[in-house]
Length: 117
Image 1 (cartoon, rainbow, N blue to C red):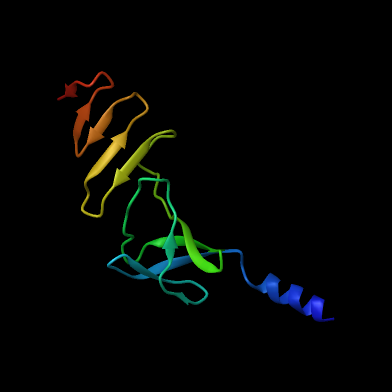
Image 2 (cartoon, rainbow, N blue to C red):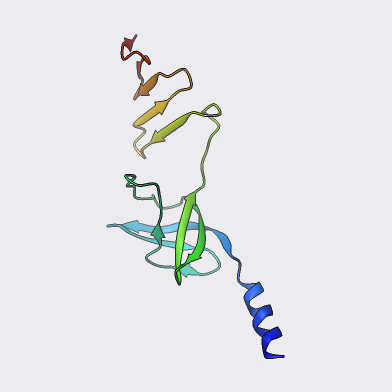
């Protein structure tokens, strides 16, 4: 009976849940999901550093006994399949396009390294 109650208790806790950033300052992020999570840890590929702005939707899961963020909701409406666009809150961007060109804040560099006007 104890085991069945533990299984039921574990099933009620979602493995992954969506949340929203409620506070983000000085490298500390707080998110609201089924509860309020403070000091949420973020995981990204090596070399990526970012601070998620307040109001962004994120995906949370348990990792090593703590709540961690495994991703931010992405808007891919303005990129084609296979392209990558990195954008800051101010609107600065780097856009890696399928034709091999790079767009940097509106300046286009061809795959051969020439500036296209």
